[in-house]
Amino acid sequence: MGTASVPGMERLPGALVDGDWLEARLGDPELVVLDATVWLGAPQPDRSYTLASGRADWEGSHIPGSRFADLLEEFSDPVAPLRFTLPSPDDFAAAAGRAGVGPGRRVVAYDRDMGIWATRLWWELRLFGFDDVAVLDGGWASWTREGRPVTDDPAPSTGPATFVPRPRPELLAARDEVQAGGACLLNALTRPQFAGEVSRYDRPGRIPGSRNVPARELVDPETHRFLPAPALLAAFEAAGVPLDQPVIAYCGSGISATGAAFALHLLGAPDAAVYDGSLAEWTADPTLPLETG
Image 1 (spheres, rainbow, N blue to C red):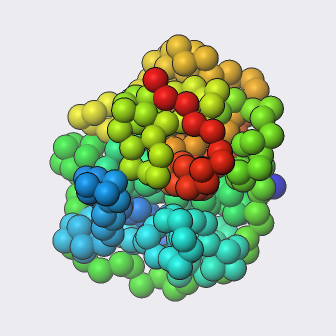
Image 2: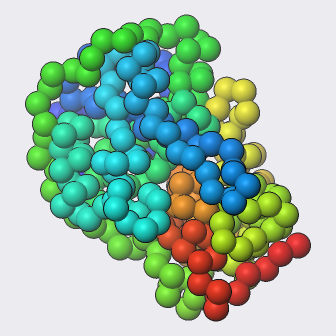
């Protein structure tokens, strides 16, 4: 289930678009460009960490015609006990509508980090039934490196859209589904986090039986572009992640997991589900097992 394209509307070329494609279409009233940046601070002694909205960066300089998508407040449930918990379908629809997302629109998401915030927005939109969304390859890093236009103009005055949520439960995994087994568990955190050598959560380690493909290793560290398909394929094969079987991706709070799920999508694999609670939920329950090493 997904959104149907409006007759006559130019389709996105795929889930990933490059700077040339986007720059040639700036000003298109059917195109919604969203900056989804969130800044993750270094862990504190108690393993907590700070989060900061990227809105101030967007206000200072951004891709012309873009808007800011607030993943901390509008596209999450800000009062839920776990950070980045999905909002209700109605709350998500309201946030998406305010951002101009709705029938007849195409969306390109980008961020100023290494793509995981853009892929989180990509995943959320698809989860709630909107398929006309892509990620800008290389995000802000490549856009500015290539000398493309930027501005500090306010968001465009295009009115809000009517977003009708059509949830796709197969893209979302709950804790009981993870416990039930039957899918490959894909941990998208760094290798030291996977091994339990460092942790931002209640207990160190990984869900037993997990495979590890760090989301940040799926992009070039300088350009922030996704690796070519052969390199992506090699990363998943080396970790023993099947491309023809169900996969549940997880991380700490359901962000990096979407980067791994996005890479699998680029390879044409069946859509991975994302365990939204991830280790933030799993490690909080002392009865649930963890592996280290």
